[in-house]
Length: 231
Image (tube, rainbow, N blue to C red; front, side, top):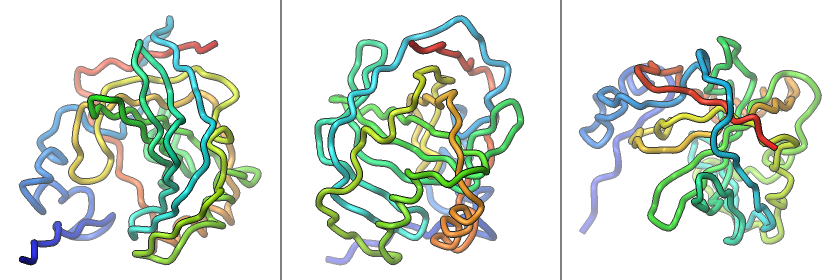
């Protein structure tokens, strides 16, 4: 028996971020949630928190384009450890412009490395990119991006090790997915090291999604943003 397709959502107009919570009861957290992402990373508390350790060794094996972004999925075996828990790397995708702000500064693009622990809890590492020199990470993603709606096996794709930042300091907070259904309980670690992306790359990223694909910052509420100095 056929099942109903999930409600269509997007980044502008009647199906844009301001209306996500009204499109379906499944998306209600997009408007009713109290720990939503992204946020403006401001008012953070220095002094360190739980360090993050990267163990990235595996290769990307599939590229997907769902019309909202392009994903690279990695074979099992890579992950991050933080707070005594290990989160396995699932994949990476992009948003352009970037979604998080840092002290009010917006960014040209942002890469999200999505992880999941053995209990199903999610942790996302955010890599912020300013306009500047081309990003090799973005170049790899663009070179593998399939057409909208296509999933392509890529075999020995980029190594996850390429995504490890040079420093491990990060801004940490409890948030959500930045797309419907906007599920909360996501551990966010936005890295302090900021990379670069070229204007040409930004234009191609946004052409893949027929325009910007960033959710605006959400209220931080009474959440605290903490800073890990890294190692």
